[in-house]
Image 1 (cartoon, rainbow, N blue to C red):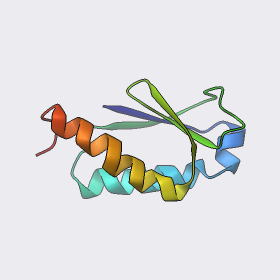
Image 2: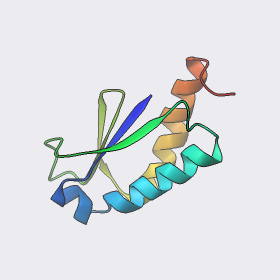
Image 3: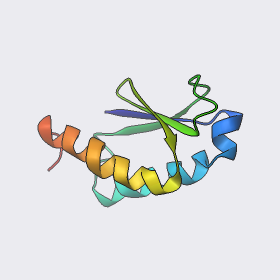
Length: 87
């Protein structure tokens, strides 16, 4: 699974670094370092929406740092479980 967090100037100023830290922490907590690639990406053309994340191609925009954990638990973990990717 690939999670890309926009680090363009608008997303950066709206909290992308905090979102990245939270996602890094959750990936480590669940031992998913071998199953999830977390990387920065420049502009995803959602600048007015807030922090934008792309998970395996699907765009999720308007996120705050509070949304990062919810997104991880409601989208990332279930997707990995469905694919047989979480132990």
